[in-house]
Length: 268
Image 1 (tube, rainbow, N blue to C red):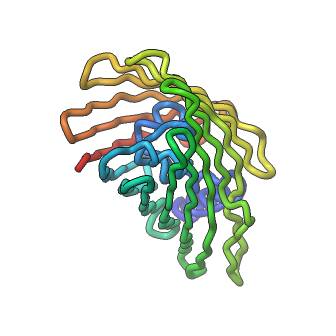
Image 2: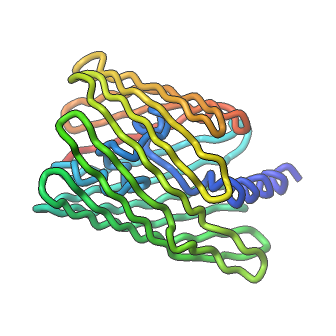
């Protein structure tokens, strides 16, 4: 019975809040899920134009654990491949338990226009599987823009699912959230990065996020962040040694409690 109730709660959360749709690596998650105007391999899961600032091939894997007493978790992989003025991003994301799971596979194409503007287009394949109901799938498109004013200030804007695509199932009809995101990042110094996002998902309140990344040592960074709707707190750290990256984060959610997250990355 507990597993049935968990499936119903996950289903309600996906439909009402789109919680299972958005996901970023531990670095951006620790900053309050501020990925709109930060150049990172996990931008493929947010503003795809953000992978335009990655100079070399980067691959990363991520694991997030929800509700410690259950098997509810998320696993993801992301790869960014730059070439000339273009970049390709690939990601695969799975969220759920054995009886209920969501899978999203994404492919992004990003183009630089000079040194200031980058535009990204991302196609997503969604699959939802529920025991005793079967599986259903859908496609969606996202578009993102990243504008660099100078070496310190970046502005990002992207839209998830502007075509209002939805799952189509004879048993139940589920929406794919449509949301609008506007944000900036500001490099205060060589050690301090500030970021803030303003997000609006259709039929939900506007959410505001703020975050900071402080490079305490050459190989070690501390991070923190907040979001307003719902109010959530984030913290984490990062260790980068040569080509290897380890990022850890934890989110405090009023409904899900504490959710730890770990990301491993490698620069080729």
